[in-house]
Image 1 (cartoon, rainbow, N blue to C red):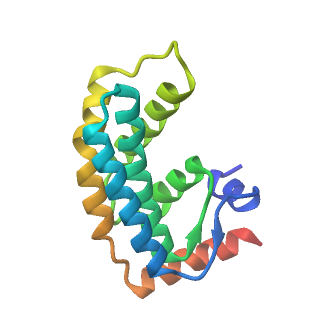
Image 2: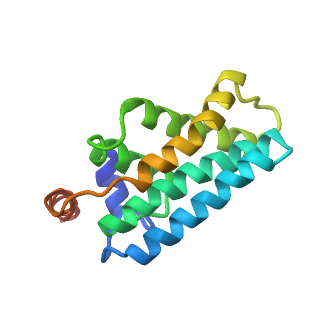
Amino acid sequence: MDKINWCLKVKNGIELIEPNENLAKGYVLKAEEALEESRIAKSRDWRISAAYYAMYFSLYSVLMRLGIKCEIHSCTIEFAKRFLHDFLNQQDLDILEDAFQARNDSQYYVDKEVNKEIYEEIIKNAAGFLIKCKNIKPNPDIIKAIRTDLSKRKK
């Protein structure tokens, strides 16, 4: 089954809500706080988690502008891959996926080590990802097309 279709059907997956600029701004603030924490945290694991959440909250602010709610991180990332390719390039999406995996590995496992190059790439690119997401301002036609596509798939 297509992952987007699965995400539309599963509890806490992708759902359409009213776009909310106030929530979008709130998630940008959370992203900025997480980014700051990624800079000052002493633990490598916490730096990874904070950098990931800086990116995730940045992306979630975009979803709030579009009127999309999703509580499953892998579905949020899949949404970005499928619908935000005009705004995020493949490198952005790869770093986001690497950060998601690194955060899972460092948070849930004591025997998994995050590769040094991936760690450095995540830390180096978190701020740029946040800035990029803050500047995503989809026009009404794009918003309508995304919401129409999701509505059709939901049926």
